[in-house]
Image (cartoon, rainbow, N blue to C red; front, side, top):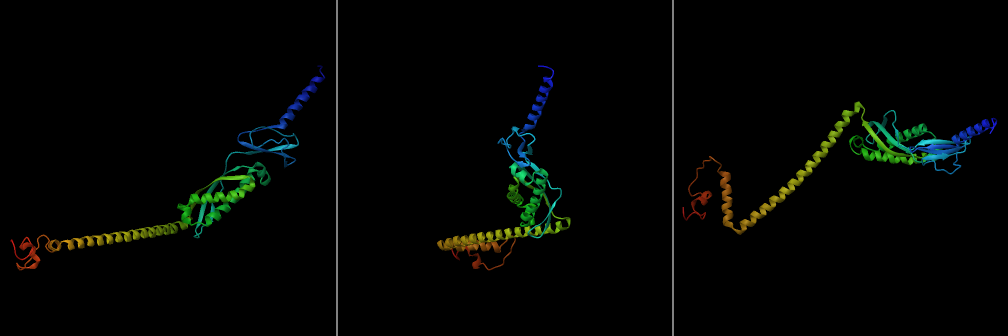
Length: 276
């Protein structure tokens, strides 16, 4: 090897290094990639760009686009104003989580994460207005919020599928009334709860009366049956009840000794004669 060949070999080695560096690229566990040829998606070597590992492309002819594989956050900068089914205006603070599930479709539809976020923000705003606009304000503030968020996510996913995106979750951090409307709406909510409580109490009162009436009827039947079996005992029992009601403690009564009212004090048999 002479002195002339050394520079040539060095140049060849450097060229091979540059060529290899331009031909090979690595996709990490948190990434996914597509290969472009003159700006058009083309995978010359038929290599799966969605899986991590070492990838190959034609240098200077093909380029790569690498996207995040992880779940990403979408947090709109401001609150959304929503008019509910009962015509209340709410200020809704929400956010979503999403990921790229089809990098090729994602590239063809939006190309960059920035444009994807803009599209998703518009989808989130529209879905919030449609879903929450068909619900009552009380459901949004304190009732069916979880079910409503699931509906918003499902509606967004119907549109996001065309972008190569999956919306993983939607959350409503806060749904507040404007300060001028808060007291009026809370008063209405209190009134509705009071009406519901009164309805429950009325139903309970009706049930209690039905139970008490049934018990009274059963009691009267038992007493009537007992009276029919032993009329003498029945007369005695009724007199004892009359004594109890007519002669409270400390009562003074002036009556004739032969009064029928006191016949059970005259004899053991309860009549006018017999042992005194």
